[in-house]
Length: 344
Image (tube, rainbow, N blue to C red; front, side, top):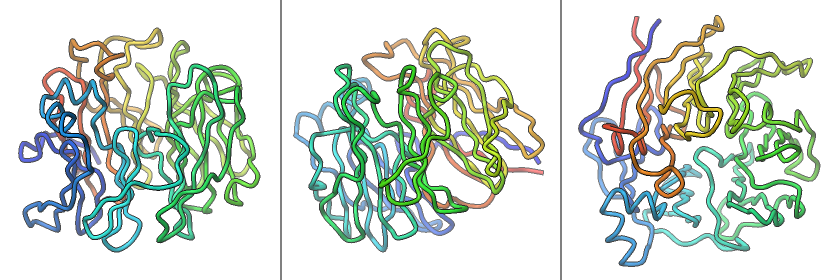
């Protein structure tokens, strides 16, 4: 089997945020759309935003500068979505969005970093610059609730921020990833809703990662290292043994899995560990072969102000033999959506 990458011209300017066999949700600036089957997309709702932000986000560089982007769309039930946009979190029910109550301060939630446990509770962590190393929190949202509660608090000085919370589909455990330096790099698990946490690994950039992929036998990740060479690892579920599988050309933020086919998106962050100036899509097959499928060069806008070059994957159960990614900050590809398809 092989995988091909092609642009979807009809989705230019749109991001596939969530999809399954029957429908998908897409975003365009602060607007959400739904498409069922082969039907045309229809408006689903919009995140309320100031008039000046709505106007500015119509200019792509300003949209990136303001971070006026949808980061997560997670289906919580029939016609109910949890949406993170900019530094806010919203609940949409039947297309109407209201700001989530209970957050102690505005915060960003990194893409893919919202986990829904086996009881339908959503969990997500604060992602802020946090140079002062204040306390950082993981929030929990009960099914049907409109107010979040603090599930866990990392004390001041413990971590810089939370990269994401992920649910293991094989045993229901929640995994929490934190960064960024030294002992702040942690991979943690909980099986009791964050009352207790077990450390899988910590202490250096080999444990610094943003997302995880799960198979029946292992947990996979690629590092988000700023200074060390970036590598793909897997952790054996039974023994806890970690094994290095290969080297990538830069830090990885986002990942995607279809069965035992695993995909890692290298970010064009232009940090010391980066080899070149490109974001790239890598495929790891069931035999352990690691292969680059696509590569896009970073555009000329500065990373710190206008975002690094990234490839964004959707959430949701997905669809057999295909998935999408959306390009940000990449020359000739910024704002475009691509389909990755399996072929014989």
